Amino acid sequence: MSDDLERRVVKLEYITEGHGEELSELKDTSEELRRTLSGIQATLSQIKWIAVGAGVMYFAESFGLTALFKILTV
Figure 1 (cartoon, helix red, strand yellow):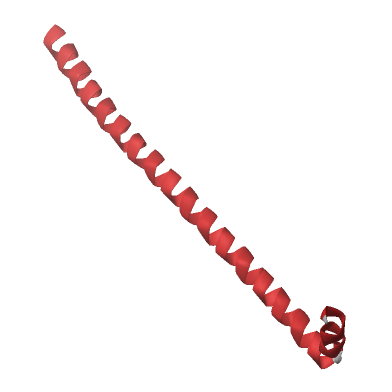
Figure 2: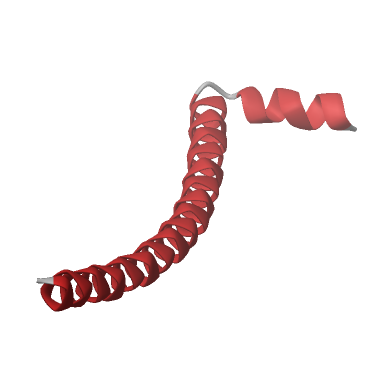
């Protein structure tokens, strides 16, 4: 009976070590995904402000405000 118990404990230790390695890999993957998503978020923010700027310029040109902007900057 003691041999059976020892064998089962050794098996559990082996399985636990495997789970520890898997958790470490998952943590690394999670950190990498977090950095990637942060980069995507920054890129989307830049795209948003470019689109806002383009929209402002379009409406300014539509209403003739670009001439006013040129007069104010000179």
